[in-house]
Length: 230
Image 1 (cartoon, rainbow, N blue to C red):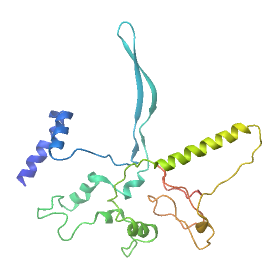
Image 2: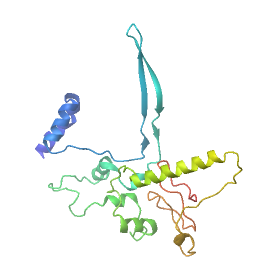
Image 3: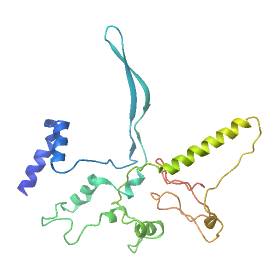
């Protein structure tokens, strides 16, 4: 498609010749005014905070206050959304296009199922156990948008009230000897029924064994290597 090739040439060179303000203006002109970065655990994003101290000679020295380094992680969220870049590889292998109006579109027979690339089905092509539970309640894999959500104010208020009450109790009886206590926060309706088993608390982990106890919930660095009791 000549127009598509021209667009590609222009777009790939735009970064070198376009300012941030020009880029934002272009998006807004086409009705795009907001962008939400999806959550991922491909890596831990590097964040640094620093200050600059300037002396009488107007010479400034930078001082790092705190730094969180960039660290590669497990990328367990790949089953939820592997991003556009990874859509291109299987398309290139079979010479298909994301452009739906062309003769070799990915929608043409035989249509490409990106979900098949994950190999999550059994030998019969069916989703079973955790995978079936996810697909029947949430939807297909690879098309799930993950974004941060702020905690409800009621939850924050409950947490703060608990912390205040606990601190006051410790201060009032600081010298008292208190035995260690273990908590297993789960509804009795689940834990008292011997027929109920738990496969895990992280929807990114799809190969857990059925166990008789509630397990640790979702975590950024959870590599799905163990099933720890909650």
